[in-house]
Amino acid sequence: MTLAPAPAALLADAILATHVGIVVFVVVGEALFLAGGVRGWRWVRHFGLRVTHLVTMAVIALQAWLGALCPLTVWERSLRRQAGQAAYRESFIEHWLSRALYFELPWWVFVAAYTGFAGLVVLTWRWVPPRRVRAGARR
Image (cartoon, rainbow, N blue to C red; front, top):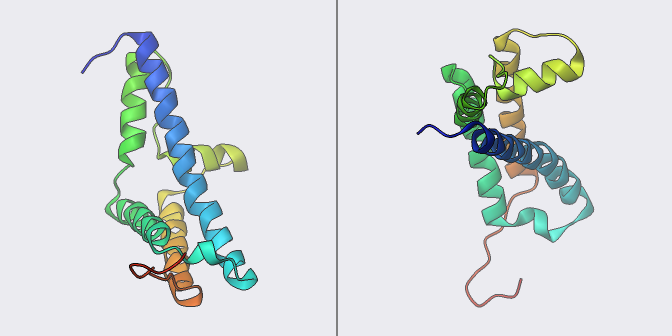
């Protein structure tokens, strides 16, 4: 599907915002799950939230191991080209993390980071296990 430049740019920005939201959900969510486990926050054990977090991180790590770019990155880049804007060549995280740190890293560093973070997410299931709410039980 080909869009005019203005709608393509707007949609690319919306995808970028969604991508940032997913990164924040994964990273900040993990920190909050760990902190909430220590502090006794009940919401960090919400089963649906934790499954969503785990599956999201598993997909990210799997993409890295397969050497595949995130579909959001691919879609955003395509829209930026349609809009006549510059598009970055590497993965979303690699591009923005490299910019934040002012140097570039090889792909394997990101694979290792995603894998390590996915391992932390799995370990958090053990340290702060989610709980299923039984039918009729109070939350």
